[in-house]
Amino acid sequence: MSVVRDTGKRALVPPFEEEHEELRATIRRWVESEIVPEQGEWEERREFPRELFDRAAELGFLGLKYPEELGGQGGDMIHDAVWAEELAAAGMCGGVGAGLGAHTGIATPPVFNFGTDDQHERFLRPAIRGTKIAALGITEPGAGSDVASIRTKAERVDGGWVVNGSKTFITNGVRADFLVCAVKTTSEGGHHGISFLILESDMPGYEVTRKLEKLGWHSSDTGELAFIDVEVPDANLLGDENEGFKLIMANFQWERLLMALGAVGAMDWCLRKTIAYAQEREAFGRSIGSFQAIRHKIAEMSVNLEAGRAMTYSALRLLTSGQDALREVTAAKLFTQRAAVDAADDAVQVHGGYGYMREYEVERALRDARLGPIGGGTDEVMKEILGRGFGL
Ligand SMILES: Cc1cc2nc3c(=O)[nH]c(=O)nc-3n(C[C@H](O)[C@H](O)[C@H](O)COP(=O)(O)OP(=O)(O)OC[C@H]3O[C@@H](n4cnc5c(N)ncnc54)[C@H](O)[C@@H]3O)c2cc1C
Image 1 (cartoon, rainbow, N blue to C red):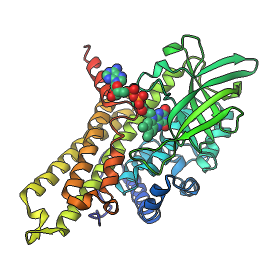
Image 2 (cartoon, rainbow, N blue to C red; image 1 turned 90 degrees about the vertical axis):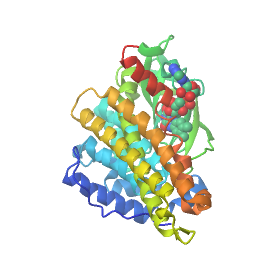
Image 3 (cartoon, rainbow, N blue to C red; image 1 turned 60 degrees about the vertical axis):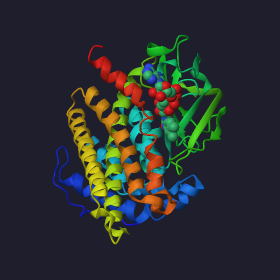
Image 4 (cartoon, helix red, strand yellow; image 1 turned 135 degrees about the vertical axis):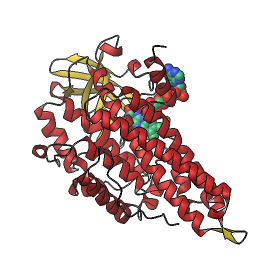
């Protein structure tokens, strides 16, 4: 059940520098010592402890890319990229990665990028400290890929809005203290009629209607939410009124790149786990790694990993140097999510019957990986973006 240990040292690949590799080693030690031994139980319980946010905050992980004035570490997107990749590479299950990642990677960035000073104080600072958990609420029962068709409605009243509607599949949705929520602020909605409001879970009319049971990501709480006449003050409008679509699009690029980094980490873990097993397991009097078919499968896994890593790092370099990276991020997201499912499936196959067993963890990796081609924009939507980019 071991994983091939890497030395923790790797060649410096731009945009990563020495300090990023030090962070990588710190994250790996934390995940291996404090999370991996416990996560099986959290998966069973369908929730990881809330205190994990406190611990991650204490270690500075919830504020890596935020300024020190707000309680962050003063790093940048590359530090955040290390965080996303290494959580998965170190063997963290998808559920814990999703819960922490939704907080740091998709729900707090819009507050930082579009929020007022007051919103930074009320929401971002406590989120970095781990005392408030954040979630991002875009998807609705009737609107997933077609983001522009959301129906949750915010009606203007004196001093703010009254919100009615529902959201589903919301990561951290059950215990989030605040929800960065997409709402319709014109009767037509659509590209010029969506805004973002920060909804607080203790606002009257804000209800968690269901905790969802899922194929994978068991230890993350995925919620369904309902809003009945929730009164939201003006001070909770995030960004400009009716300009929410811009926020969604800006957020998607980073979310998709973080997903690609997570998939690269997961593929790396699957490969090391599979090599270790192939070295240990014997059949017909020899190690199964000596069979050509197994060797070749492992070789193919390594090629997919390197291809995914190269595409993802290339997109990361473009995005972090301020260039348009829509095509590269989209391609990296598309390629890596399916490749990670294949890597986990290959890992299960090489483990034989043991691969199907809980204790060997690769079955969990396969279940966790399956969300990749769906969440944050499906494979089909990624292909649409790429195809249209060629003017077709
Ligand atoms: C565990 C989990 C966690 C999630 N976390 C969050 C979260 O924190 N916040 C949040 O807002 N959302 C979250 N989501 C939602 C996720 O982003 C959506 O599931 C995803 O965007 C797809 O939307 P949908 O499920 O409604 O599928 P649909 O949009 O209904 O798609 C169904 C099928 O139709 C295809 N399809 C749709 N449109 C087209 C098209 N134009 N061309 C070709 N094919 C198309 C899709 O590719 C797919 O195969 C989460 C989902 C899950 C399962």
